[in-house]
Length: 187
Image (cartoon, rainbow, N blue to C red; front, side):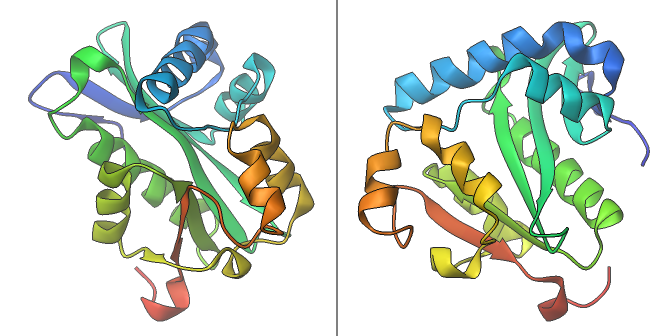
């Protein structure tokens, strides 16, 4: 995958070990955004996000040496499902389509690494739902997502985890969205 530099000077690239220096700022930005929106978010550790970078499973947006945005990917259910998670854009870079560009790059990376996997995400944000829809995702019941217990354990750090558990993982505050490559053909 090629690095992309846009006319706003922001470079969107597949992250690597050299980008670990941004992990704490990424995690703080994600946490702050969730608080402002009053929504839950699965908490991730520094080590977890750094590992995604080292594995080439993360997208980072940089304005020079400044962190501008981020997203990572993970496979679940014996690589039959892939989630794009942790999409965040730093406040000062919002409102210019950067989230869409990051998500597009994460989508392309997911399709390259796991071309036959179903891509999914959980979100409570209208902007992310719109981006997902543009990429071909559709809202689905939670039952159409991975049954991989490790994925669902990631929801334990969310403030809305009790809703998920009370409904036996059928419903939550988030909307489940799925991209099934079998319905879109090879791209």
